[in-house]
Image (cartoon, one colour):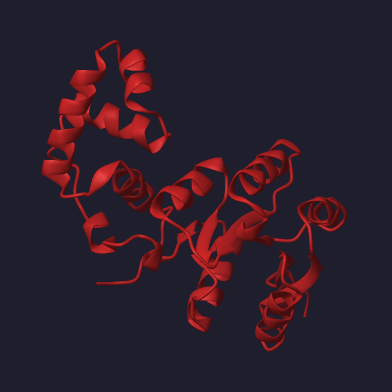
Amino acid sequence: MNSGATRIKTVAVCDSQPVAVEGIRAILNPCPDLQLIGSSGSLLAGMEMVRAHPPSVLLIDKAFGLQPVMDWIAGLRMSGCRSAPVVWGMSLSEAEALRIMQAGAQGVMLKTTDLNGLLGCLRRVASGSHWMEAGIFQDWQALRCTRSSLTPREQQVVELVEQGMKNKEIARVLGICPGTVKIHLKHIFEKTGVRGRYGLALSGLREKGLLSLPAA
C-alpha cells in the first residue's frame, strides 16, 4: 500500500480561468498516479499555494503575461522549491516557448492539446524530464538532426545559442566578431538542416533528452 502511494504525483494549477481548473480536476480524478491538490487564480496566490504545499508539477497559465510568468518561475527556482513548472496557453510561438524553457520551466504546451498530450506532459515532467508540445514548433521533424559534422567552434556557438545568447554576446564570449558568429550559424544551419536559432536551441534540448517529441 505504501509503495503505491509514493508513486502518486501531485499537481497544482495556477490559471486565470476557473473552468480550466475544473477541467483539469475532471481529467485527473480517474488517474491513479496523478492527484490535483490545489488551485489559484493569480500568480501571487499561486506562490503562496506552492510554498504551503509544494506539488510535483505546477501548471501555469501563460495568460498572466509572458514576462510575469517567467519572473514568477525564476522566483520559484530561487526559493529552492522543487515543483516542476509547466506553462500552457492558447497560443505560444517558438520564441516564447524557448524563452519559457530557458527561464526554468520543465514543460510547455498548448491549451488545445488532446488528453493524451496533457497527461503525457504531466507524467513526463513529474518524472523529472522536460516536455515541449510538438505543435508549437512548426517543423518539428527538423529537430531530428545530427551534429556530428560540426566543428569544435561550431559546437561552441550552438551551446551558447542554447543558453539564449545573442550574436554579440556569443562573439564577446568566444573572442570573435559578430560577423564571424553569423558565418558559423549559416554553416550550422546548412549542416544540421535546422531552421533558425530557435530550432537550434530546441534541437539541443531534444539531443540532451530534455525534449519529448512524438515518433516520426
